Image: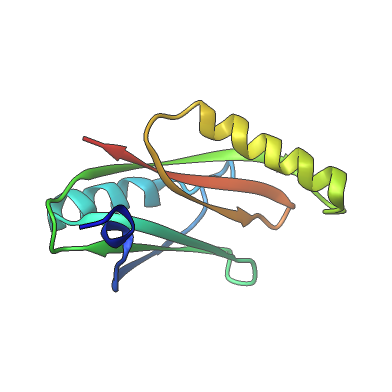
Amino acid sequence: MSQVQGQLHHKFKAFSGQLAADGTIGAIAGEVEAWAAGARVAPKSIGVEFLEAAQRLVLTIGYRDDEPPYGVGLTCVRLGRFEALDAPELDRLQTAMGDAGARLDKVLCHELYVTSSNDFMMVFMTHRG
């Protein structure tokens, strides 16, 4: 199987919950990690959306169940507030993303969401194995 073929997936699992007081994904991280271990799957991607009207987070995992399973961890990092999203601010966002990712080992994928107070939060899925 080529490297890209190993990333392709067509199965998904959805989770939902409240943000923690600090705006991070809170308890959802543990739910996802426990599900991945118990379901014996190979997680490939995440999707995250904060539903401001409902004050809930929806997190989805794309996975495969036709290859050896492995553990994953989810880490949520506050990147800061970004308002204008012009070129200089996008550079600042990109730098913050790179700095946050550099502090973690074995990053598989990432996703951004924005809280109702305009905090940009980044969720990293890392390989644990």
